[in-house]
Length: 86
Image (cartoon, rainbow, N blue to C red; front, side, top):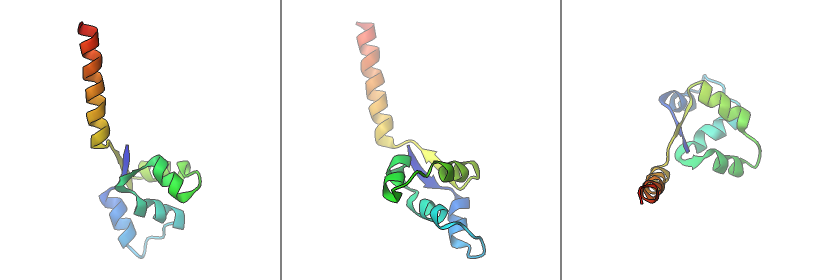
């Protein structure tokens, strides 16, 4: 799953009056729909579980299913269904 900023997340980055901790701001910047939890954590070289949890629960981030993953899952399920039917 890929992480993507919500409208609230985009607004938070653009609002100079809203203080965000530097790590939170970095995660928001990286959450552009092309990175997963793991890839952002690798880029930041530290555990970001607590920050991600807060951002998701607070409505700054959403997780979206990568279309390539979804297609591969459908293919695998289709193959599994064929083998069961045979």
